[in-house]
Every structure is written in C-alpha cells, then in structure tokens.
Amino acid sequence: MINSYKNLSASGAVIPGEGVLESMYVNTTGSMILYASPSAATNTGKIISTAIISPAIGYHCLGHIHATAGVYCSISNGNTLNVTFHILNS
Image (cartoon, rainbow, N blue to C red):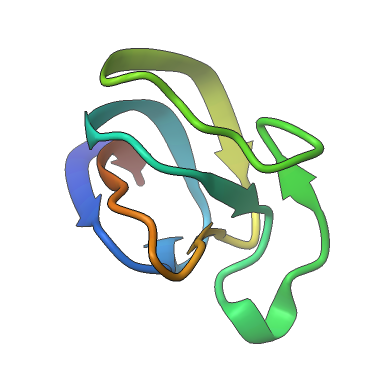
C-alpha cells in the first residue's frame, strides 16, 4: 500500500478509485459531506455520517474506510473548510 495525501478547500475527489481512507487533518473548520463515489455526478451514498459534518480543527482517525469506487468530498459554498486526507492506495 502507498501512502498519499489529498488537501481540499473546495469540493473534489478525495480518492478517484479504490483505496482506503485512513484519517483527516482539519486545518480550518467548516462543513462537508463525504460520499462513496468518485465524483459529484455519481454521488450514490454517504459515508462517515448521514448528514453534514463540521469537524473540529485537528487530527481525526477515520478507521480504515475501504472505498471500492472512490470518495468525493462536498464542501458547501461559502465554507472555509480546509482538510488534508490520508489515503492508502494499492
């Protein structure tokens, strides 16, 4: 497995295909929804929570979320959320 990191301050793909979402570090807080899909066009189901979450600044272990089709992060317009995701790819 290869460690990689993805920083987002606007909506975008966290993992474009299969991978494992390990953790996230929130640099500035705001709100987001994580979807079990690789893009906004294919949002099929929510992961991590069933609603919009507003994580506190700091490190958050996500417990090895295995994404078979990818992960997309939706950050609402006007938010100041800046988050770095830790990903394991094969």
